[in-house]
Length: 134
Image: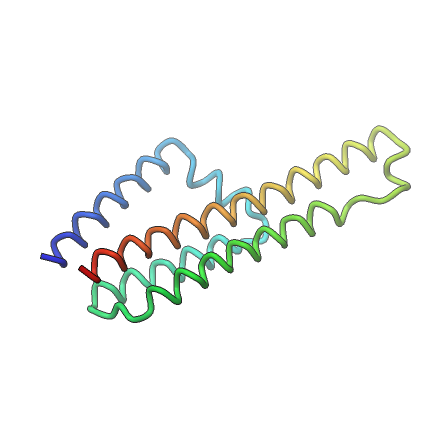
């Protein structure tokens, strides 16, 4: 029964990801994360799901924490990128202000996208852990 539920839940999740990719949301998230930490988060997530289907569930609780932590690291990297381009000299010209604004938006994009991927993957593993405990 548990294996059937795992297939159904993961198929529904794959359909949701396919829907999000169809509308460009997946590409948006990964293209706006210039640090590419979202790719690492996604790779860890896929490996964890494969392990669940192989019957190993002892890693799920720790993997949830690690994915959330990686998302938080992505947030910090994004904020560092956002704030690194700010200097007093660049605030004196309109072109400098445009450069600062572009850097801020790029850094915030990294921060939010990495956090989003990390939290979604961690929650998904939490759901798989809950299903396999029953």
